[in-house]
Image (cartoon, rainbow over all chains, first blue to last red; front, side):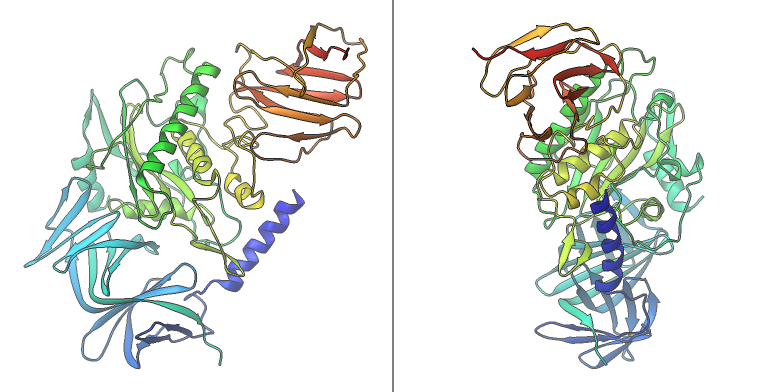
Length: 179
Length: 359
């Protein structure tokens, strides 16, 4: 029993101490991949991908949807083990109007674009990509992030409203930036 | 009611006799919590009605009758177990629970028979009554997933009932296991690790237990802290995490008990019925007890009055003179009082066994 208590105390302390979090507003988070450096501003108002700034559009606790001056969108999603994935590209807005269930997956159409998703994959014009992350967001939202060979697709689902970010994707290693 | 509920209610409200499946939030208002996901992990819970308030006696199992429960699973490639391993473990767990229901005669005296017949399909087609999301989550009713999570602290697995028939005999819902290593213990250590010994199987057994109507019961497979035990005791014994564990999940006063005893040298045991004041003297240094089917072996160093369990793994016995064990699913207490070995069931003294003196 003592061991359990000690374990729980360490556990509760350790997550606060060691996991990267966007909810704290004191430290910037720096992420690095072979191609890119991403820095998330401490108060999450923007992040920069190779010095290109993306201003906050929507804060999702563990992810940030942002837009650049040239109207490119980017989603950065924190992953377990101090990693993150960033997807840069176009943003598609959907409403739950033209959607249908096909077996265990769902297909929605918006204009000429069709998006399909299942618990283990996402599919758009770029093809079907395997899901790498499922995330519960605040305010009844969920996120699905799929990625393969530099192509990425993220779906932010708030019930009747969907947002899809489609474009190039990369996985990064992150840490708190030391001032 | 949100539009997605209307959609689901219409789309999924398949006919079950005269009963209709309706979204659960039309029947219950789930509690919600704004607490962040910090603190110890929970074993997984049941979000039905917003808390772990399932009581087997109140007909709160998800499925009744004998129609097979259509079941499927989605698993991500990084989960750590592939489809064939999951199918195998799911079959094993379902088999464990079916055995337990037979052993405890759970359905014998019930008007509404709890359904334990799971039909595990090769592929999810969208109409299944029970879906397992392994490393992923539901694409429909995802807001209910958030609501289910909000009541739990760093959950590693949980069940969520999304629909229930109007006559309460059939449901729809899912079991969700989070992805591997999503939580940090610090120093680069992360959990859960689903490939870890018994990790997935035990949690699956726990969650299926919720679907069969069981609430949390300490020191059984339905222990709320079952996931924590995995991380504290690396080599936790299979027996300890068996359905009844160290306690009874369902008291059974009329179950048949079959057991036999033998020592580690395979010497014969003599069955003796003793009165309370009888005195027995053990001659041997070591003794062990072997259950007839499951080969659970207890080994005692008689001199030190310490018990240790030898069956795949080791576990410390919290009380040196008492060990709880399970024979064919029936829990007994085995007490050592210097010179006595007493087998008990339901607190009543049972037949005592003493080993014949060595020749």
